[in-house]
Image 1 (cartoon, rainbow, N blue to C red):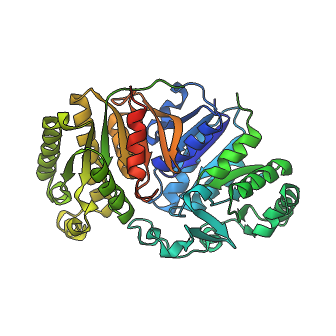
Image 2: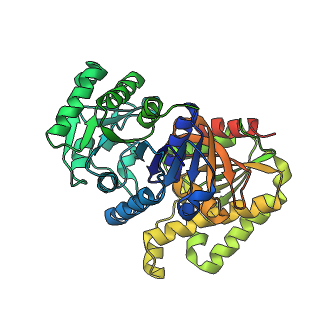
Image 3: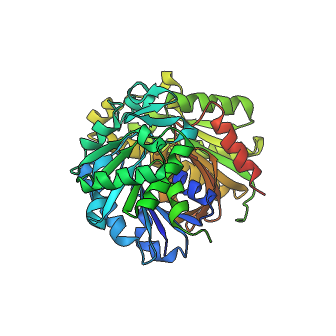
Amino acid sequence: MAKCIVVADDLTGANATGVLLKKNGFDTLTLLHSSIGSAGSVGECDCLVFPTDSRSVSPEEAYHRVREALVTLPGPETCLYAKRIDSTLRGNLGSETDAFLDTLGPEYIAVCVPCFPSSGRVIVGSHLLVNGVPLRRTEAAADPKCPIHTTDAFALFQGQTKYTVSAIRLDDVHNGAEHLATVIADRREKGARIMLVDSVTEDDLQTVAKAVALSGIKTVSVDPGPFTAYLGRQLIPVKKAKKAAGKVFCSIGSVNGVAGTQTRMLLAKRSVTAVFLDTAKVLESDESRAAEIERLKEELLRRRDESDILAVIGCGIDPKRRVPFEPYMERRGLSLEDLSEKINTAFAEVTLGVLAACPEIGGVYSTGGDITAAIHSAAGTVALRLLDEVLPLAGYGIAIGGKLSGKAFVSKGGMVGGENAMVVCTDYLSEHLG
């Protein structure tokens, strides 16, 4: 089975790490959360990436999902374990890392390097900066499900884990891999099970990876992806996929300002046949939701010859049209999670309905981890064969199994990339079809 097991808390993050491993020459598969029982049927691969969809669940449930993955997925050849965390430290960082350390045993430590230089994430003095801005002053701080109220990664981790966390500063990294290996061993000897390591550049990440390899200590890498990729290069010996064809379908559900700017750039720069999902109609009642889904499918299919890019876009991309959830929660007796699921699955139903009637669509672009997961869950996708990194935190690959089998995809987090990121992703997908 796989030499490397990566457990991520959402699907887009899983794919983002997977493509980094793929770029290092490793055959990589993403096994979808609903398909954990089918792990044995996906075939051989170097790296198996598994999303637990656990970012916004309780710490106890997140722990359970990670532990289940670690009991189910590893094989006799597994030599690298990785916990993929969000690049802005959202989610159950501590309990999910605890699940690794509890399951793998006392000989393991966790080395956490929450640094993604090409995406503007760096950590200095245990404080995370995003494009030079302290984390708590970025849009991540206002995330509706997992808000962040501190820039101090050390405090965040120590507040969520039962294990001792030790902060390793940038000077120790810059003193070289051999020195850093000694520091890691010393901290472990003194009782630390989690090392939080400063890093700013790709060279820093490579130094940390070399130090871990030199130390000989069994280590779980905890990071947004780049450190895991470098550590994989140190620990796993390195041993083109078919292209799809046709039009591109975009499912754009993120409502943050970054995604809004990217969507407007896509509509301005490319010919897109777009319809807008009315969130209020989706939430009003089950009958209203079904009618709205049917309306969107019918309009897209009627207009499908207008362009090579079809898109369903959430109306909340326009701040003036964003819908407050509280009235629907009160009137319908539903939780925030319930309402979010109704919206996510509506995007999935529109996407799959149009693809079923429009076989010339060869690829799907999706924005937002929840939307991406909903699409593949509804399609019954078993795994995602990861082929390339389009942008940092945006992966390209082919779906395996289910209604989307053989379709190309690009998925991207809603707050990832510059204003042209969506244009770059859809262009990339279009260019790789045919």
